[in-house]
Image (cartoon, rainbow, N blue to C red):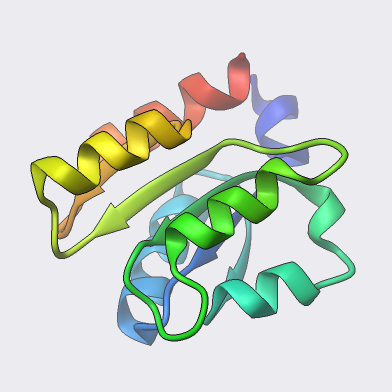
Length: 125
């Protein structure tokens, strides 16, 4: 299991630097490799995105939102799972995430143990 963790790279996409850094620190403390992005556009423009195995993203962001990012990732030659985190959780957003194929949906503040558990479970599939 340690070998899989050391090879899996997880992207954190959030326009709020404090949330991005806190989520990154959480994942790094659990021994995941992390790449951070302040926008969906920055992730999509990164030539290293092919290294990613999973994306954890905010939904509400300037420019491309999390749903647009999910749709763009679905078009990749090897799409990766996407987990949403939002401060504006509503039943409608949750349903839209599920219908869209998101691997998970969390409200802020995030339950760290549940997030780490879902990331581990998703990457083992």
